[in-house]
Length: 352
Image (cartoon, rainbow, N blue to C red):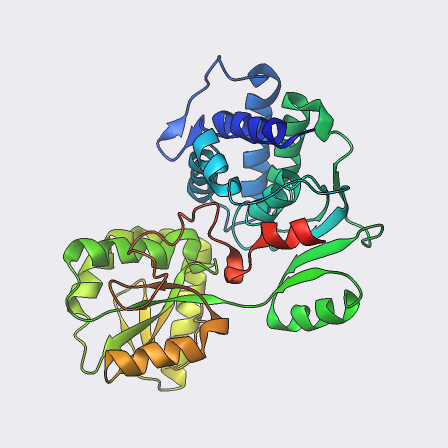
């Protein structure tokens, strides 16, 4: 199977996913193998939602829609054009996936297969319904994928390289366990936003999507703000108010109530608006329903801090502050070439 066949298969998958959007689900009879897969995928979405309370239909559809937009022939060609895919022989690459947001491991899955390798997937128990079904769709539209995609719940065996995503604690285990294999080991990362008091209402409104999408559970969600000293949060609170219905969702509300009680009993200073708490804290990882902030004296000092702590940061949302910054509202819309932890996955795969 050559590269163009693989691109064609993922393009067809993207077309299939286009039927499932945040504006609704609508069957398109022109989609290949739709009679076999359309209702089945709706059922898998239902199972994913029932299995994991954080996977609401809206969040599942947002993830699917994002991938449908990414998986066009133009986008995949633009992504792959810089690489030489003439690998001598296919290896088996194991992927240990996280389960914090729907289809969070899909990019690794895509990267392994587009590189011409075989994939062995160990999914998180929190996100185990969607990807195997999409893998079956790939095998229908491109039969040469059969035998190249395997899923396991057992101990990983018979692989040549590994891509593993987990916490800082599990990363230490991964690094020891896979020390004899080529690997990409990902640890905890969080995203931050830099505010200067010059942001427009539209920018702050967009920033609220970076904060609340997926309940803030993704590494690309903004969990911390850097603000000037004596920053007035009124405009920020006004801009995020569109997300206030989130407090009506039980799992989020339970976390909000619990964390608020902890802060009050500990007598921490905080700001809150009934569905979000803002607390001054030097940490990068904030609990659900909480956003940390830290004050800076000047931009140069802040730029130095962001450089020194880059290993803790996935994205920096800002306007004219640092290189490779992300525009407000765009953290959950990465391009195919936006690699987690800034490690080029495809380059790694082509060298193993």
